Image 1 (cartoon, rainbow, N blue to C red):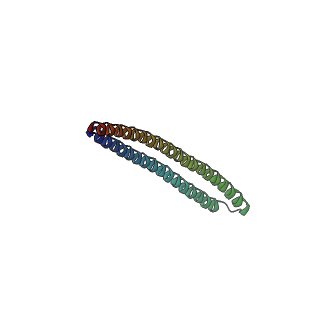
Image 2 (cartoon, helix red, strand yellow):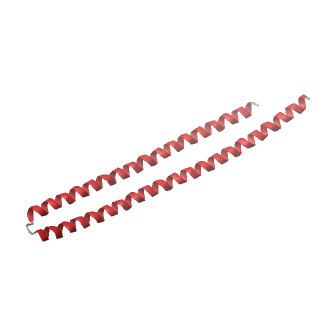
Image 3 (cartoon, rainbow, N blue to C red):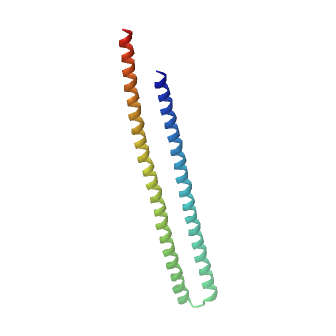
Length: 138
């Protein structure tokens, strides 16, 4: 009976250890993803500031309204292309995090199934031992 108790304690301990490992892994994924997305946001801000600076320089050095419109349009197209590339990178970062979380959940499901099988086997063993003890006592 003591062995059964020890097995139960070991199983609970193993499940707690796995739960903590999962929490730490989730935390690492979240921190890394947030860091990457924050870097993306800073790059977006930098690109807007750069485009604004180019617009100011353009207006200060060009007098022809047609030329201002043409060059401002080029600046805006360049900014749009940079922002689209950053948006794609952000989507890729999100997809990578999603894939890692999906993998983590699948591994968790497998671990639960394994633990359930162990618990079931221990229950069967306990029931058999209890039956043997009852038969001997009778």
